[in-house]
Picture 1 (cartoon, one colour):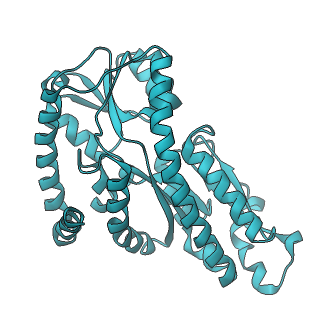
Picture 2 (cartoon, rainbow, N blue to C red; picture 1 turned 135 degrees about the vertical axis):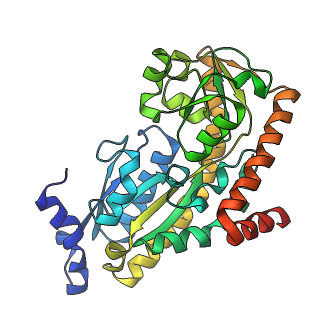
Amino acid sequence: MLSRRTLLASGAAAPFIARGATAQTATRWQMATPYPDGNFHTRNIRTFVEDIQQISGGRLQVQIHSGGSLLPMPQIKRGVQTGQVQMGEILLAAYSNEDVFFDADSIPQLVSNLAEAKKLSDLQRPYIEQRLARQGLSLLYMVPWPPAGLYAQQPITSIEGLRGLRFRTFSPATNRFAAIVGAQPTLVQAAELAQAFATGVAQAQITSAQTGVDTSAWDYARVFTPLGFTMTKNAVMVSRRAMEALPSNIQQEIREAAARAEVRGYELAGESQTASERTLAQRGMQVIPPTPEFMEGLRRVSAQMTNEWIERAGADGRALIEAYRRA
């Protein structure tokens, strides 16, 4: 819980720049992210924050709270809306119960490489900006995770092999996938993965190799199968009220720094995919390519989930998917 003094220093004090204050009375923002310091998303945020602190001439200072140390994932977006923190990072798909457009990238096989991820993200951005703006938030940038793969205790050679397994989920889309393939969905946050597998709460999951490294997957799973399943993305957002309290030139420089952070984030995502899969193998996990039978089953599920998503998203959703397929 932030103290009253901290909140006053960060949120309520933001308009001081308009009164001509100096760097000695810097605006202080808090930023929350659920990911650990070693994660490439967090490293990207640190560079971004250093950038905006420098371009503000010291008039803006940002304290990063990583690893869910201030707010857990489910509370970060609300924390930015209420001013508990001024900036936050979320996995968009984790909030798709609020709006279906937050999880377009959760449709299996819709996106399987960085170029496709960028194409979808650029088309999706106006929709996300509009939705966040209605909640008093401004989108700064979005960066994808590396392609997701399957973690299990033994090789799974077909989609039917998931039937009956206790399957870790982290979003409505992963929950729906588990239901379609006949697995038993169980919601588990990343920080709780090791315990969930150790106690039998989860037996399999689909997530990125980076998350596997972050959570020491070699301690709880034996096999990783790269599937190019999805490339969900994180969004970094700011309180519009806090942003608009800054001089217009600094607002513009922050947006330019955010654009640089997005480009850098895609580069880091590509590096993370290679490095993370190598780390999993070095730690003793089997990294096994998927069988044609598994991929065929995955394509069937993808077709079903794409149609279901369009149905839920309506005309805007159909327009997004059609634009993506044409691009």
